[in-house]
Amino acid sequence: MRMKSHYLLVFASLCGIFHNGNSQENVAFGVRATQSTTWNFRTGAMNAIDGNFDSNIRHSSCSSTRRQANPWWRVDLEKHYRIFVVLITNRNRRACRLNGAEIRIGDSLENNGNSNTLCAKITSIRAGQTASFFCKPLGVHGRYVNIVLPTRRGILTLCEVEVFGAHDPH
Image 1 (spheres, rainbow, N blue to C red):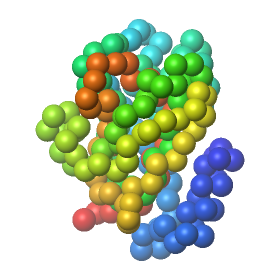
Image 2: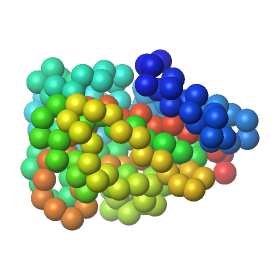
Image 3: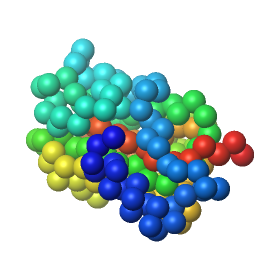
């Protein structure tokens, strides 16, 4: 586990962000991701959940769509979770491309999952940095985690996405 993730989990435990005594884990690691389009063979959706935090897209460590209207990326967690926090690592250049993106969580694939419950809106993440987005007040339930640029034509690039939550069989 990365130091940053470990720090987050310690912070989360101090703040009481646990559900029924279950500790949180990165539930996105090792599952399946997809995206609206793929820029090239080095930028597949799975790169965003492979545990590689390298923010240089040329190192085959980031996912990226082509320039399009409302590009999106989605991870299928395969089970239902209560998601408390999503960590996103931005690429080391052109950081503003993520500005205005939304994190949406839910069980529906209607509109490719982009109409699910809003967890957070990304105002900005500095180039090459990781930012935490908390789903307030007590987490958002769902199987699918989407990141979408909802209102513009653009390129969606994600170098790493970590999703922390607890299994919720609801």
